[in-house]
Amino acid sequence: MHITFDRPLFGTGKTLAIHVNDEKRGSMKRWFRSHKQRASTDLRHDVNIDITAEKNQFSITQVKAALQEASEWAVERNGVQMTKMTSAKGLNAKHRIDANLENQTDVCIEAGLQRKADLYLNGQKIGTTEAKGFLLNSRYVIEVESDIPEEIDPALLAGMTYAFWCSF
Image (cartoon, rainbow, N blue to C red; front, side, top):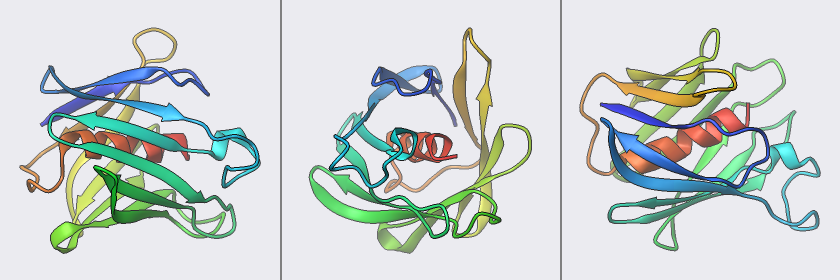
């Protein structure tokens, strides 16, 4: 499976189309809270994403932003919290995001080398994600080598990947 979406410039609230195998399957938009409401005083660390998929609406909302400890996001489907995502703890830890979805499905995105990261499902590598391009035609690409379970909507995986790259 091949999932792509644009890589916007910093701090944009632009709606991004999510393409799965070159077919539009949803959209997502990063949004920002007011200074008093956000988990971090730095706007760059306020990562909140609304995702519209074919059958569901997802929301990834940052509830904790910390450099020394793990950052945390609440993940909702159709207004009901389904899980939370956490980042790696500490400044020296390799950047990663972990989530435990329904049916005990663990999803992990872990930084690799040179704008690439690996995707894991229940501890098994299933693909990669990469930031491609620079100013023109810049996008994020997710290559999944095997089929993913139905509970992992490709649009949700795109949103989780977007949160990973935005929180880097």
